[in-house]
Image 1: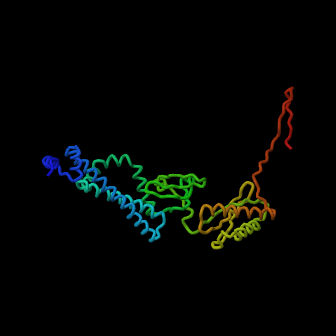
Image 2: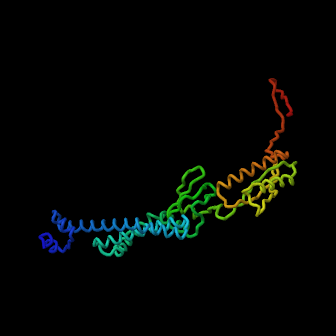
Image 3: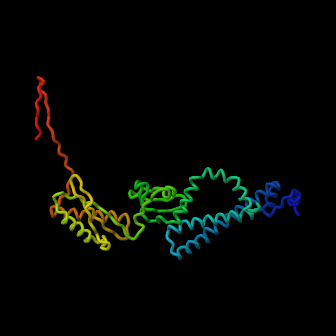
Length: 309
């Protein structure tokens, strides 16, 4: 036994090959023991982490692909897998370095810091729980067009994590939305079903033929290739305005998306407007009539009244 090993034994510190080498290099037994434990911890952590990320995580990804899971379900599961690999690597490295039982140590640390962490991370925890609900309830999926906050915000979902959801607006802006903002209020998902009903009100003059205008509105809906025949388009008289009669057209499109919604409605409304112009059906605009007279005063104080024409 070398002199360094004898000294380490007398001090109650058991050194391995790395520790003995460090002690021979001039460190004390205590310093060598700490350094050896740190090196063993980092080596084990790095080895398990890289093996897990390079082998285990890709295997889980391929398994999820074989089950044909969509991005909504696959991303959180891969995130949990990476977290599990990191936790396992930390636990094994903790024991390999001789620091004791990892779970017992973590229990003590968790008990000491739980209150402080809970108070400091209320919003984070709230968003995490909301992310779990989004994952389980599936109110929307990646690629869906959603609206929230009474329609003030809308866009296409690009990514869903356990804390935030990223939404791309139709102006190509990226919104990073806390998950709790999407679960605490009313959220509209127009494309959740396999079809979507659209409505548009056409205003015609009081002197125009309501039946003929209704026929034109229905005919143009039936001609459009992206408007469904079943359910059939329909028209209802819904408004009697100050200057027009409101005919509400109701029609359905299949496999809805934001692009389909805007394009189809625009093409349909344009076609109806052209038919109205061809057949002399007016789309009036509000007209204001001002009545009264003008009063002028001459230099001698006499008033001169000019009647309105």
